[in-house]
Image (cartoon, rainbow, N blue to C red; front, side):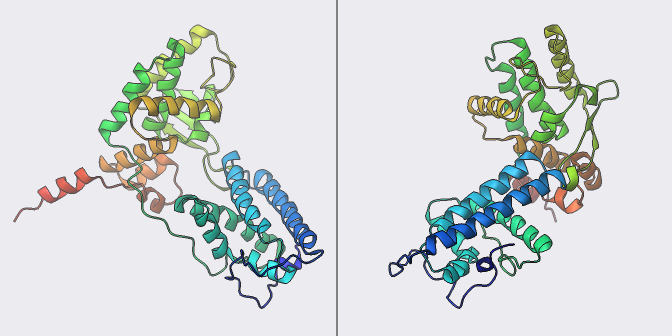
Length: 337
């Protein structure tokens, strides 16, 4: 059972400074509060098992929940010296946890990310355990709007040219680097979908990619991605190099070191090298974001782009419609009377 001190706060104000200089340790208090945290740790382990096995969520989602909880848990350890009732009240003061994160230097975006990850955990406790979430009735911490995630057409070309001309060390590694980046940029595959893409999922004759278990609850949905002529040429070149090496792993994108599918870490290193050499700041998600955004900018109907991206809601697709400064300048030129 979830400890009562996490359910019923005392009359003390949850906004009291947790670093109060008047607070003095009371014998047995630290151990009692530590036991409450240990019980919460057990609850987290149950939650992670549930989302991994029942919800079939990705390893990235699991890591997100773990990091979010780790931040919250560190905050709780700063409250161990308070009497249990006061510890309970302060442990439910989510805004105080947000303030603690910001004061120790965590960015506004990361704080918002941790907030949402921890909220998912407490919502599960509320849903499956019948215990009121401390997130009820409060809003996520805001953060400044960032620049459009999508790269301009010139930046996308520079990324591809850099991947082509980087000193990879072998023709195979070059073909692999260009093919993985191009598949995210030209077909909109997510990082996890690149890792899971199977050899049998790629049909260059029909110019399709079968994407299994896309993003979403219960493992997401399968979808079919389509291969443009340019991407087809890039993938065909990669397959020729793969065949020359005699690689037979079931994963489509294969590491030259392990002869097995590439990992998240090897994909990260690949992107890091291209990013550093190109001078263009981008991530795997940036490439996908560029795919969706430039389809919309090219006039492809919203519902078609939504299908190609594997979005469940049209509103999700609309969120990718970045506006560049050049668009604004071009737009005003269209005004005539």
